[in-house]
Image 1: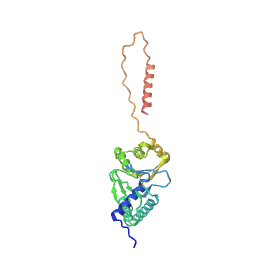
Image 2: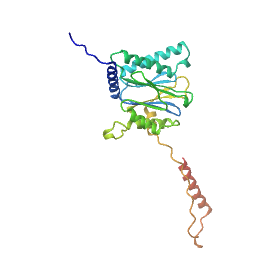
Image 3: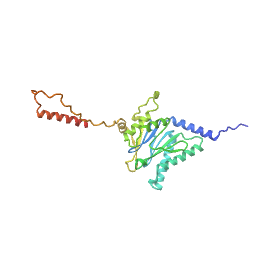
Length: 278
């Protein structure tokens, strides 16, 4: 009689976890963070397959891992949100409810199916105020975590998340938040540990804009994204340096400047100051 191979439940779960983590680590990273105008999504993506999408009016979705698996989850989330909004009220559709539904589905797949999903997803909801913004991380085994402020997903998420948390502020402008996210994504993966420079064509960027009514999700690409990446902080306004007194009185025989020429000099100084302020 052939011997039956036995594996303990703990070993099976460890093998599934290791398999899922390896699959996730092979993908490019994505980050989600709050800024003064809402929630920002930035993913390193060289293809036309979307990692960042809209779920409902004020809810966004981001994922890393196997595209076909997280795309199935995204579509299921959109259907659930639409059904709940139609059956009850649009205000009853919340990011927390969608995150819990994803956690339930991934947990069931992890424990009941032979193969776990190789995905890690984020559900974010923009609130009426910055304090009401919500970001949730849902992992391959159905675990759900509340991530206040910033989160990173992918193979080197820990290093990227550390770079984000060092410089993140709740009052960041959109341009500052985009440049911070891109800098954090480029801080890993370079040759010899050197940082990388990521261009607009390598990025997928979207926001949940707090100021918009109804559907708050919008994508940022093309010239708009390039302008945000290259935008420089405003320079400090120029100040007039105090005039130094003459070291010695002018000679008595020297001809005094006429009022017209003195007025011309004053006009030139005012013009220079006006140019500096502009």
